[in-house]
Image (cartoon, rainbow over all chains, first blue to last red; front, side, top):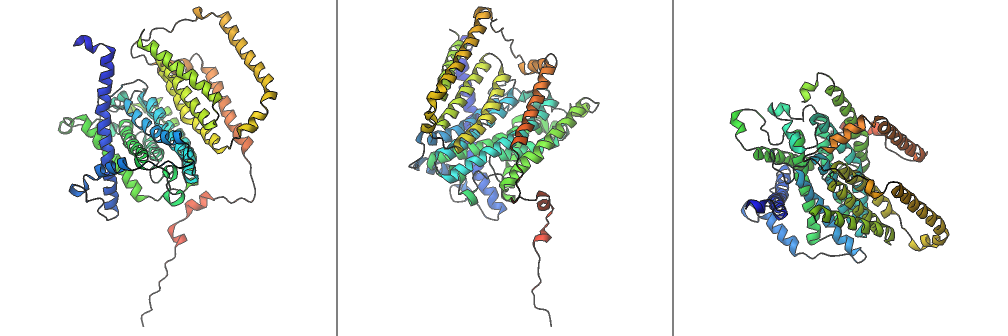
Length: 341
Length: 198
């Protein structure tokens, strides 16, 4: 047995097992996030939301999945066939790839890589290829407009997002996500990075909403202006893949915000009463809270005008993050660093 | 043969193949996407060498930002291949001359430093943090070249903006300050239309 555990086959097999352990709950989470979204927005708008399939609508995601699987995938006459079908895959694969570096507990990750922060930033930016290629390959003006908007928005917000992560990197002095969480241990709620890095926390979370193309930054879909944007020509499972990718990215952004700014798997108050609860519970609770904020924001704010999105990204977020990087840099050279470390 | 050697040949083969397709693809969008594939495989080669920082930065900067903008531009162009090919023969001598020059320069490099003398990559200690190592080197030994490169980039950014900035008169733009200063009472007046009580 020990001989087998040292072979390359075992390494491959073990990686596959870990991937399945992460991806299956993730896809279930995506399915039930769609239900949660419809329920939460329903209650905010004084409706009931889905309540016919299963107990109070609890089987609605399963019904939706079966419906989407049996629908026909229609390919427009003049579309570029290959890229039209490749685009949903290009959107979905990066949404799963980022999970390779996410730590779920001390040392619990598919890959505890040194440059984890850089990896998630690099891979998370790739999802936009699915949107751009979909918009181009559909050969439809609305899809194309959606793709153009998505590309411009991504470039604007990725810079602000990168700067926000530079701040975290400066304070934690490591790119390893597990070590970033461990650097926030100690005083519970008050020692997490959301407090000293508050501007980064806000900028990162809002840029995360923009990068996942969620309301109020969902101009790439913008159903009141460009019908449904980049996925207007899609149907059936090809359409479903875009949605799976979007919701998986929402969960990812919430989880990464938790890891970087909200202390990951640590309990909010350092008392024996709360510490015995396993870290994964805290991690998922914080993630669920941020996901609720995603839905809350969607139900509350009207869609941004396109020029305002660009203005917010380039003229507000980037200067704010640069200024706060300078503040953190100065603080790290003075006795104030005791607060940050 | 160790697995990494196999992977090296696999990634190199895909890299060379996609790089060839970049220049032979008839559709410019396909060419751009092949270039993305080439970058990915180059990044994979960096990571095989243990240079995960360089590999990830390659993906982050080139695939994540530069190629998105390339694709953005290429999709907007209606490229007519027949018109581009018209001038092919007249440009051929210049192109060939540059190609020959490039090959000669490479040959000179390899001739003066034969491949045997290029040191094999050192064994990587487990859990080496090459991001930190690179940072330390950049900010100590290579501080001046690094800072000068940064200043050149800054100048290039400002120059690009200055060259393309046109102040046209007569266009309608939003006055952002005025938009921000608007309050509800500026936009809506509630008028009491109830009948006055007798």
